[in-house]
Image (cartoon, rainbow, N blue to C red; front, side):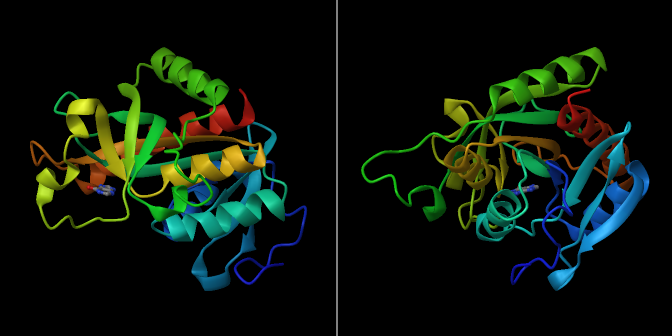
Length: 236
Ligand code: HPA
């Protein structure tokens, strides 16, 4: 039990999917899990445990942004023994080659957040995905014929940039292909505590072409992303 989570040790599986949205956590548990059980509802930040293809798996909402995700992830690792953490989210597009509904596997995560500066002194730490999870996700996405890109993601603390696309500066021309708000903190905590992490995002709004996904398309592509993440999580 923690101030943010009333689950007991043992209530979570070692593999945990991490959507930002609590209702998406509920949807994932109720749509995909066999025998889903609610394990946390503090602040309505819902967490569930069940199984997928006979293997134990959990889902825990993280809320939006790196400070919120960091609380849940720190506790999942240090209190509940999580070993494999897979963020499933949505992101904006910073490269015209990435089309709406495409998946981005965040191979690395650039950030503007102070959370990743903490403890590194003069160094710019480079938060990266676990290579085994990244490779498994890329192989499975390819085999399933899903459109995906592996590359550098921006995890920003700012959703509404005052300068719009110009606010991303030189990042797009340095191969940063998407923007969301959580991956860099997830990768930094995973590195610090010696566990595995990967972020998979569906690109829902391109900041260059202004193309956006509609609600129906969102649901279909989220299904692809979640089944991919669940297969990677259990090592299927
Ligand atoms: N910015 C940050 N996070 C996001 C975006 C965005 O444009 N789209 C979806 N998540």
